[in-house]
Structures are given as C-alpha cells and as structure tokens.
Image (cartoon, rainbow, N blue to C red; front, side, top):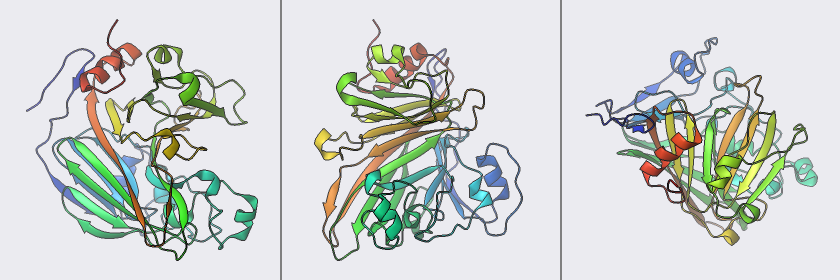
Length: 363
C-alpha cells in the first residue's frame, strides 16, 4: 500500500514489504553505494556493515570506526547521510592518545563540551596543557565497538572504556514502524567523577535545507564564523520571519549556529526526502553554557557543492557522573520521500502536515 499526496506534499514511503538484516564483509559494492557512486580500490580489511530495515526505513552502521552510522533513508531511497571516502581508504585507523581526526563523517557520538575534550585525561599531557579542542577523542570515535545484540530491527554495540573521557558508551538502534530510535548510555568507569554530556552529530550534504524552530532570535541563537569565512554569517531572513532557523546561502560559508530550540526537532530536506530528528527539549540551564542544545555546523563552497558538510548536532544535559554512574540520551529519526519544490513555502507545507510544534500556520 502506498499513500501519495500530490504537488508539494509528502509521498510516504510504503514501498517495500521486506524486513531483515544484511551483514557484509569486504563491502566494496555497498561502500561504493554509500559513497555516492564513486569508485575505490578493494581492501581486504573493510569494516563490517549491518543493515536494519523494514518496509519504511533502512539504517546501516558499522561497529568499527567508532560505532558509526553510515546510511539512513526511507525504504528504497538514497542515503541521507554524508559518508567520507576514508571509510574505505582508512578502515584501520591508529587508535592512540596522539591520533588525529579522520573524516569518516556519517553519524557519531561525541562527549561534550568541546572545550573539555582533553582536560579530563592524563594520556596526552600536551593536549591537556594546550586546552585542545580538536581532534575528538580517538578512543570514542575511531575504536571498534562490540556488537552485543542484533536482530532484523535492532542492534546494540558497546565501546571500550576511553582513557581520555573515562566513559564507556552503549548505543542501541531500534526500528519501529516509521521511526528509528537511537539510545545512547554513557557510564563513568573511573574511580573518580567526570563531567560530560552526550552529543549526537549527524552529517548530511551541505546542500541540505534545514529548519530549526526558535522563539527569540536575539536570545536563543548565537552565530559564529570561522576565520576562513570572509563574509558575515546570517540567518535566512524568510525562515526567520516564520520563527525558523536556517543559514543564509550564496557565499562561501564556514560557520556554526548555537541554538536553544523552541521545540525538540530538526528538519532537513535532501536527497528527495524529508529527514526529521526529534529529541526531548531540555531546560537552558541543563546544557553546558559553551554549547547549544542544537548546533548546526555548515561548511560550503557554492563552486564546489560536494566538498563541504552540514552537521546536525544535539546535546543532552551536562552532568557530573560519580564512579559507576550512568546517563542516557535519545534521538528519534524519521525519513519520508518528498516530491515537492525546493522552496520555503513548499517545505512549510510538508512540515505542517507532520504536525511539528513551532511551525506557523499559513497567513
């Protein structure tokens, strides 16, 4: 059964009656598909990829390279996630206190805040003394996780304990009808307290058009540009009039938005689909003051549209964890085929149809 809505409405993904899990080794064909048709050499040491699917959604992840999400879509549609060629070109990274950043992209979990990434550790004194804010903890984002449970609709993976953060992460993925639930639990495995939050980071194409609800732009939005960006970073004026944030486009952009959202969702239009990330909205004082509950990082060159990235980021509350104490956070993902125009007006009609809080009614 398939329900179609004409013109600029949603075309809901009731396309396939298949359900199952695909586990592959070697992965040349699958990785080529994830990497948008580019061709790469074969490697005998590629990560394992597991695919959860039902008649409405598909999600692929690997327990390797940080327990990373590599593909998500409405059933039968294109991958919504941006995946780096490093997944195939550097499948066996160095995992050490000196390791650097590798642009695998996809979906990953970071600890927050970023300013503390190297402050709660003794294994790299140089980065601690420098107050380094880059790279992310290699033991969290590069390490192999253990696959402890898997079925056709769900999976659980568990990280080793990081000597940088003191945390051990458990990631649970569950497909249920038209949603994918991500649940992440962090446990302090040290004998002393640690302070962190759980930080979801989902990478998509820089051409993606994004919407985040904001009640007061003067109070609830902070924009920061990187030195490489020569022009001013701005909010899209048409969206702002509607109480929604998206970056103004047209120039080279390398900037970040820190947002206190008025409702718990991010909507993104890309690859012929509407991608919605939903999460519990948190009180302002529960989020570390350096961060926003929602953050968007955009790197885009209009002359080279495939080179950049848009990061859809969500922070959970910042907490102190006693030895053995844990905290959890969730995101819920939806993907629906979208056949409407690439305009704010058409996007709003689709968002209203979903009934998302904070979307204005037509005037």
